[in-house]
Structures are given as C-alpha cells and as structure tokens.
Image (cartoon, rainbow, N blue to C red):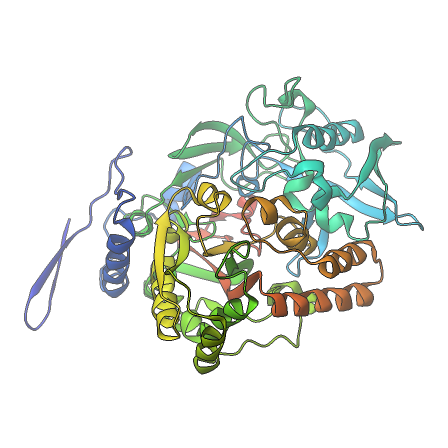
Length: 550
C-alpha cells in the first residue's frame, strides 16, 4: 500500500508494508545511535501525518482470534540459566508480595504478614486455593524451597535483577526460613523492619519445586501460579504464552499472548502502525521523542504513569579526576536538568533533585535542591585543576535504544567543555566489563528497584562493601552512610525511618557518588482495539486484565 503526501514543494512517498514474521529492521552497533536518532526525528515528524494502514488491527479480529500480540524493547525471556526464567511482566510466576501504586507492600500469594516484638521474626500467611500451572497446590513448603533455592544460587547474574551474595538486600541476615502450620516464617539474625517491601516482586518469586533440578536450575519450563504459562520461546525474538487453566484469579480475557522482542525503536512503532502488534510495553517502549507523535494518532492510546526509573550519572571516584569531590560538584552544577527533561526527554521526565524519586513518596527528601551554575563550576575546575586528559562519559548501546542517551551525553559533553572539563562520549555494549576495568569516568544509566524499598539502592550500589561499589570502581566509602542505612533497615517507626533516609540523601547530595539527572515517566501504547493495559511503577503489566475493547 502506497501513501503519498504532497507538500507545497515536493512529494514524499512512504510505504506501509506488513513485515513477514522473520523479517526485522535493525542496525548494527557501529553508528547505530546516530542513525536511530535521525530515524526517530523522521518518525516523530511524520507519524502523525500518516493514515492508518488497511491491515491494522481491529476489535472484532482481536476478539475472534483470542490472541494478543505485544512488543518490548528487550527480551523478557531469559531462559533456564536465569534465576527467574522469565521477567515478572510475562505473568508466568507470581511473588509472595507485590506493590501498590504508592510502592507499598500489597498481598499477592501472601495475604498478610506480621512482625514479632523483637523485629527478628516475620510470619507470612498464604492465599488458599492456589495451584501451580501443573495442578499441584501452593504450600508453605514450596515457598521455603524457593527462598532456599535463591540463597543457594546467589551470587548469580540476571538481566532483570541479580542475586547478590548472601541475599542481604532481599532478606537481611536470614538465619532460617521454615513452614509453620501453613504459614512461612523468616527468622532473622538482626531486626529488619521492611521485609515485606524487600520481598516484593522478584525476590519472592514462587514456582513449583518440581520446576527445579537438584542444583537449583530449571529442569524444564517454568511452573508458576500466574494467569499465563510459557508455551514456546525464541531468545531475542518472541515468547508465546497460553492461559493457565489453574489460575486462581479467574480466566484471563485473552487465550494466547505473544510478546515480540523489537530492540529498534522505529521498528517497534512501525509494527504497531502496521497492525503487527497490539501494543508496546516495558521500559523504553516508546522513545521520549515518539510519545507525542504516537499519542496524536487516532488509532492509538498512550498511557503515562510514574515509574521508579531514575537517570543517574555515576562517577568513577576511585581514580583522578573524580576522586576530587570538587570536580564531582562541578559536573553536578553543569547539568541543566530542566532542559534535559523538557527537551531531550521530551517532557516524559522530571528534573532530578533528591536521590530517591518522587514515586517513593515521603521518603524522598523534600529539601533536596539542585543548582545549575556553570560559573561556579568553572571556578571549581580552576581550583581543582584541569584534568590532563578528556573525561569519558560511558553509555550502553542497549540503553541508547530505549532513551536518547547519545543526545543527553553530547549535551553533557558540550557543557563540560565550556567549564573546562573536556569530555568524550563512549557508547559500548559491554559496560560491565569496562566499568570493572575502571576504564571510565562517568556512567549515564537508568536504575530502578525490584521492590518498594530504597534500601536496595543504598545497600546494593553504595554501601562501602557493596559488590557494585567495589567491582565497578565507584570508590565510595563512608562509614556514616553505612551506619545510617543499617539503622534505617532496623527501624520499625515509619517517621524515624523517613528521617534517616532524608539524612542519607543529604549525605549523598554532598558526596555525589551518583547524582540524579531526571525521573522518568512510564509511557506505553496500545491500539484502540485493546483495553485494560496499564503498567505500574515497576514496569509490570497485568496481562490478565487486557481485553478487546467493546
């Protein structure tokens, strides 16, 4: 089908072609970011002008087929070598505890919990009548087997959320987990006031013990309690799900769900427009520059919600020049956060200030302020001395396909040059290897949490003995910081804990091992043939609630 639009001086021709199942537009790593940037501008400028393709999806077709097809920028299937096998968003498995819209712990497979007076014993009551997708019942013993499996596997890497040695960020110092009259009891060496929040989502994934082999790996397909089961998967291509006949929450509206992996941002939007997919989900589903253009189309529904995702700039403080706190402050003062959020992130983000984003509610420091003061930055560079070499701004090529990081990094590079800090941008795939080698100065990346507890960010990334801190050469070592986060983790009084987290954030605002650049919104899109698609602050979609529009 050919679509022709005439302007006053020229004719622009566009072809709207439904790609075959095995065809995908893609770009190699080399030069991909610049081509992607140009393509995004072209799509953003023209997508609102293009009428719908004749083969676009429709409500009757969706209802008749019973199949929902979605696309995500990353692979939500990790496979049998991963601790989880699939991302929680696929709803194959469920956790003990999930989160509400305010990131507060909410019942999932556990319906309630209570804490002993000494703060060292948590008891979780389980939901009754729940069966795994193989028909076996959910029991307290099955839950214990899953927690003990995580402890045996750790440390273990995952593209979703890795298991750290000891699992203290998830369970505290766990002495024992046991079944007790149908409930699950966690016995802790030290008080942990926020265990339900720590457990929320990934760290309390529950699957049938029969899904695991003797070493804790997967013996076959995942066997969870969610509304869908895994039918087939092709890594990096697609995942096919089928409704779970044993699901405790009722029959989902769609019999089958297919989630395609489409890393290229323009290809995702093209698939949506061509009717190949009914919606785009997950973080970076729409690039920031695409949101307004897609929302303007009459055939699509864009939903934006707050998210836990924050864009941070992390310093390598283990070597010069950023071992000098004056130069970290100079970079902080050079960042025009308002312009980045409004222009480069196209209004889908807010300028960063407190280390914790506003989605954490009253735990985010209300007194946090960030200044834009290039003149003071110049004076600090002059005092500290101009570095003998250009500093590097490291970004991941994968994340550059989700957010306009190449543009953001170039703006930072130019601004730093003007205050006397020449910089260069390094876009690579293997950021972990580069950081562990210490071959970087700043790292621009987006971080979130697997649960509703800020302790994850503080303890996993910035505590003096944290693997991330040590292995990736952050060089942050502050005994007062360590003491405060340990004290907050053991404090049951919510007001006292809030005040401790405010003190922690003010300390980080002074020390600047990582600085918040912007708080990212959470845009997803579906065709008007679909209803019920929402994505929570942790990028989780409830597939069971998606249905054909009436």
